[in-house]
Every structure is written in structure tokens, then in C-alpha cells.
Amino acid sequence: MNKERIVVIHGWESSPQRNWFPWLSKELEKAGCEVLAPLMPNADHPRLPEWLEFLEKTIGRADEHTYFVGHSLGVIAILRYLETLEEGKTVGGVISVAGFSELIGYDELSSFFKIPLEYGKVKRSAKRFVAIASDNDPHVPKEGGEILRDRLGAELIIIKNGGHLNTEAGCFELPVVLEKIKEFMLRY
Image (cartoon, rainbow, N blue to C red; front, side):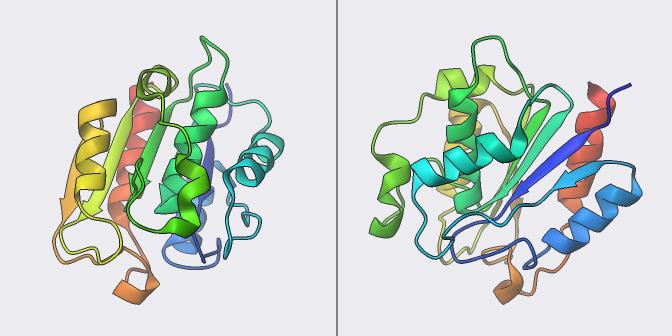
């Protein structure tokens, strides 16, 4: 049996040691999963080509036993990575937390949005999508999650008063992410 592998991708101006990522990594490792939570290159000044190249090298072979969890900019990085998978390759699932797939007003992130996302190709590249959004996120409007629901068929979960679902919002654990990953693994 293949070991389940979870790839956790942080966002802009963040790292794997922030937010709820250390908690999630420990919980997943206790459950017997392999966890990759890399420090993305130049997180303060991210560029899509650099992030994609880094993801491809870090992840290696992705398959139905590979699951992705992204926070904020980490979500579009994952979706762009899924666009690069060859036809017929499928990962087990993607969980978006405070994610977005279209430019939300930060020019510094424009390299991730120079060309429109191929939603059809992305949708075919993962068995399941979950989008978790907050109703009062100061950086990513909840419409970011609604777009993922509408374009990718993601299950949408709205968290009341969660802010950006990060350290600044007091979010050091996010049990719904762990629950959804376990559901992914049971389902497939």
C-alpha cells in the first residue's frame, strides 16, 4: 500500500513554521502520513515560475496518494502546479484555505495571473476539492472560495469571523483541514 503524502504550501510573506501548519504537520505524521511543508522561495517577493519549478522538484511524482493543502497564495501555486500535470495524472485532493484563483488587487502577485487559469484542466487533475474561507478575511474576499466552488466543484466551508485564518487571526489549529484530509483518504 502506498503511503499517503500531504504537501502543505504556505502563502505570501509566510513560512511552514507559521499559522496552523506545524500543528497540521504533527497531526498528519501521527496518523502515519508523509508530510512535505517546504519553505517556498522568496516568499516575500514570490514569482510563479520560481514557485512552480521549486514545486516540481520538491514533489517529484504526484499521484492519487498525494494531497495538497494551501493557504492564501499557496492555493494558486497548487492550482498552477496541477495545470502542469500531464493528461490523465490525478492527485487525491486539494484543500484551499483563504485561497483565490484570480487576482485580488495585489500587484506584487501578478506573475501568478498573467494568463487565465485553465479550470477544466485543474479540475481533471484532482479527485476532490475543498475550499475553506472566512466571512471577514481582510485580504481574500470569500468570493475567492465561491469561485473555487463554482469553477472546480469544490465543497465550500465558510468560517465565521476567521479573519485570514492565520496567526494574526489567532488561528494556530484548523481541525476542519485535518478532518477533510482524513475524508479524502477514506474515500479513495
